[in-house]
Image (tube, rainbow, N blue to C red; front, side, top):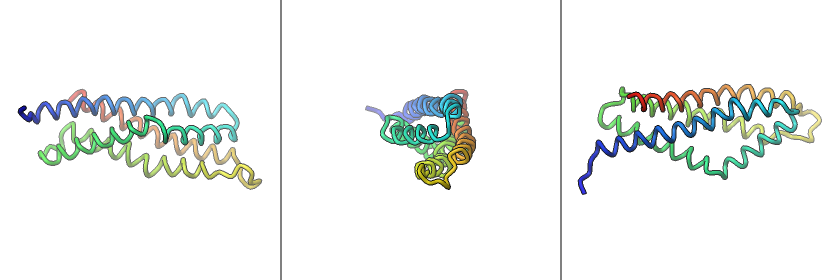
Length: 160
């Protein structure tokens, strides 16, 4: 069997398009359906529901998609770096994905999720309305960035 680097890179690009699109679709759904729905219920229930979602998502196939797409983006970046093509569509797509999706999640969204998980429901000094409003506003802002990063990366690969 002959090792064909061009076929391998094309296959890698196709995997990236699919995985970037799928994960972007999940983030899109959260930005425009899930979080909007949670804003229509009282803040205590919104916090409880979002904490439940965050617990479930960590044990779901989403995590496989999350790490698989990050791995694919990293391999794409390395491939383009090794072949001195970082300024290519693939190089930009992988860099946008790694920074806009992965780093944004790790540095912004996960800490917000952890803070929400530590909300003290029985503490009379805890204001669920303020907590939820702060969480939702900030989480959505970073989720929009993740969504745009995924779709922009996918588009760069499709139209390269």
